[in-house]
Every structure is written in structure tokens, then in C-alpha cells.
Image (tube, rainbow, N blue to C red):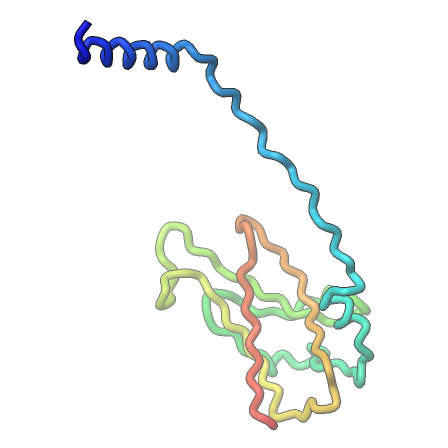
Length: 152
């Protein structure tokens, strides 16, 4: 046998061996046990344990003129009460399916503004915002809260 014939036979034997081998069984990925999170060492625990220095309601929603809305939505103050029997503010955002929204990006967007008027918040050490999102047809609610501080 020539050397080329021997190489062909070895190659054919290797191909036959690979072709006749049992197909590899796909293994299930191993499920790793998650590490426990000791809540007492978390930032959230520290924040919740921090004493509240002072507390007051920033807006009781009694004056709708304090709020301005721009964008593809409407602003209303429903008669139904929220938690602790407080008045609520409602924003309904209009969605556009067949044509782009009349905004720069072509996407629906709402900008809600409440001017605080230069109040001194130096005696406070936290801010609490109560929000209930009632979203239909969207997988999430993109929300951005911006605070502008013009004090010291």
C-alpha cells in the first residue's frame, strides 16, 4: 500500500468512527444555589434604620395649579382618595400606534413638573414619593425623577 492510500484509510476510519459514535447527550445546565443575602448588612437595611429627622407633607394635592404637564398626556386630580385618605394626582399618557407621537423622538412622553419655590430642606434627611403605576400594554414603566437643588 502506498503512503497516500494508508492516509486515506486512516482518514476514512476516523470519519467512520466519528459518524458511528453515540451522539453527545446535552447536559442540563447546573443550577447553582444563590448565596443568601444578609439583610442586616444591606444598604436598604441601613436606610430604613436611619432615624427620620423631620417629616411633613410636601404637597397635599389641594392646588392643581402647582403642577404643570407637557407632552402626550393629561393631568387630573381624581376624587378617589389614595393611601391615608390623601388626594391623588393622575397622569394618563396617550400612546401612538399608527403614527409617531408629536414629539422630537416620535415616542410618547410626559413631563410633570412641581416647582418647590426655594424651600429649605436642610432639616430633612430623606424624601419619600408614593407612586402607583397602573400600566397596560407595556412590559415596564420608564420613569425618571429629577430633583434640581438651587440651594447650598
